[in-house]
Length: 155
Image (cartoon, rainbow, N blue to C red):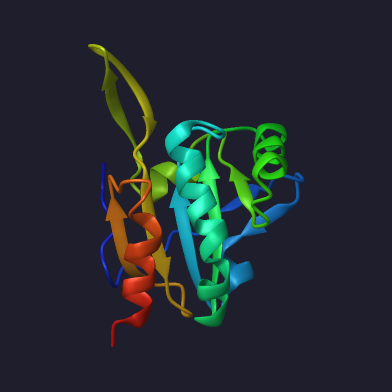
């Protein structure tokens, strides 16, 4: 798993959102972007993380920052998750985990002694030029928003 660090170019992607509309990294050129990767829609940690992003949208918008969530769930599951919690921002379906691999968040995990491949919960702040401003791997669901807001306030 190759990790991205500050100053790296953000990997390009095109993925369908919860309405099956294509979304590209380049759609956000000229503004900052929070990209967070979560393992599975409508699970406890992912709901906590996504609702925190939803609740912080006024602060993110005031800082000129958009937000998108990415998980391996198909668009239909992303749409159901969005509708249930009224998230109101793009949730992208990375069913082939191409973006997850490019961002270094697709890795071997272990639960109850069983190994499997999955998303390492992570978040990235991309600057207006498409460069990684900050990266947080293995981020706690409750730390995503505080980390991003602190980075946006930093000189």
